[in-house]
Length: 368
Image (spheres, rainbow, N blue to C red):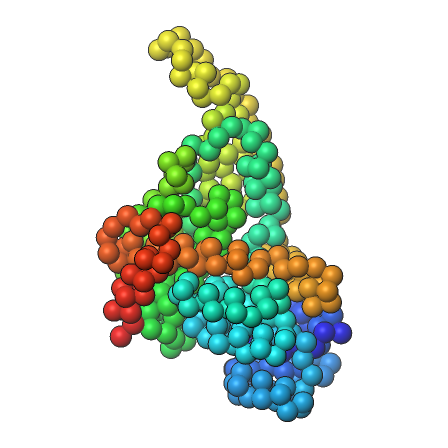
């Protein structure tokens, strides 16, 4: 058994703990922190041995140092600003760490993690485990449909009522939460884009602040992204639309592919677009075939894949599905989306040092 401490037993921490207990993955939860009674009551009946409860991560780590508890690994599920400190304290003690998304709030801050053994650090981006996401990545890598021309990614199924922003005091401010939908919901989507295409080199963003909710941060965002003039895309998201949409449409030289929540639709032309381009106007017909590949993207199974991987990593039998290098890509892209909107300008992502400095300055102005 792997002895696990869970730091942060809020909504998601409770969810992860419940999955671990119900599925009997191999973790022995020996310590938990930051719990609310109503959430703990959900778990009480599932525990064979009720773990020791600590009032903070500091208390938990002190108990470990004093040999009051035995730990192999830590699961971090706290507000974003706290991730870095907790991860460092765990890595200092040679513990394995799985941290909920995002890595943190500011990309430049999180580079300090490279001073420690990052082979023991992983992150929860469970959507990488969706069969549809894996299949689309495979299709792109195959080059079967030619070069990518353009994409549009609309993710407006992150709807949140006003009560979501009111239920925890730290939500929906730059100072305590780090932002709105880009830092809270969209790390999954930004991670998906980075996994498919890598980081863009240019971003132009337009965020709308408190458009649908009485909050200071963004609840709607639209970004134009460009990959070295090879292809470009648009990313649109909102927490104020219902019914929402979740659709990624990619135009290739020979096909159009749409990813929906439960299927991939492929419309393939007979020839490459460049062939039709050379024909005389109105003297051609475009023949195409449509294929639909259906999937069951089970969120619980995706979380299980991540947690089983964590167990295997601690046992020395695997590497993390999403390591620090990969997780930082979506955080950097998120920071750039904020910066572009803050200063109303195109941002070149290749100028990392200068860009991070400006982001720090602009973000700091809003953390008051």
